[in-house]
Every structure is written in C-alpha cells, then in structure tokens.
Length: 126
Figure 1 (cartoon, rainbow, N blue to C red):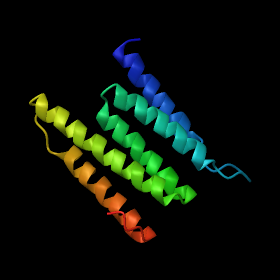
Figure 2: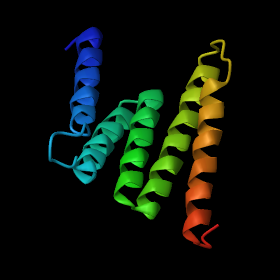
Figure 3: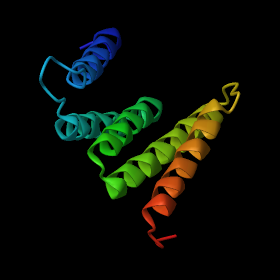
Figure 4: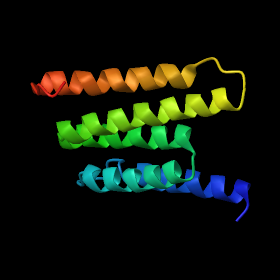
C-alpha cells in the first residue's frame, strides 16, 4: 500500500468512527465503543511514528471518555495526547524543520486539560 493510499485509509477510519458518534433518531451514540476504536487507531499510528495524528486520535478518545463520564480514562487520554504532540514536535526538531511550535502548544494544552480533569474529580494523584 502506498503512502497516499495509507493516508486515505486512516482518514476513512477516523471518519467512520466519528460517524458513529452522530445522534440518530431515538438512538444514543455509543461513545464507549468509539473511544476504544479511537484508541486502537491511535496506538497503530503511534507504532508507525505518526505522533501528530496519534495525538489527534487520543484527543478524540478523551472527548469520548468525557461523554461517558470516565474521568480517569479522560485524563489518561489527554496525557497520552500531550505526550504524542511532544514527540511530534521532537520529530520536527530532529529533522531540522522549521517549526512554529504548534505541537508543543497542543501538548501543553492537553496536559493542562488532564490536570484540570483530575482536579475537578478531586483526585490527589498529582
């Protein structure tokens, strides 16, 4: 599979998972299932060193966990997203590409959201 076909396949997978979250007539979306599928996609992207896209999938996973009320899973997903964005920024830096540090900012934002979720839950894990 060429790189272009693989990219189209990843976009297709992301869109099919997102479509499951749309409200249907008299049906509640299954956010738990979507969260698990986002997690699988994020882990496969992480293993392929596509950290930027893995971070995006982890943020979608965190939003699904927020819908289900799973505060611990939400905080973990936000932290994973932040870690992936930091790794993506590091890849830019190692390749000596010009960076406006947007991945760094996204990573910091994700970690702050993880801390906020844990504080609002009342966990003293920090």
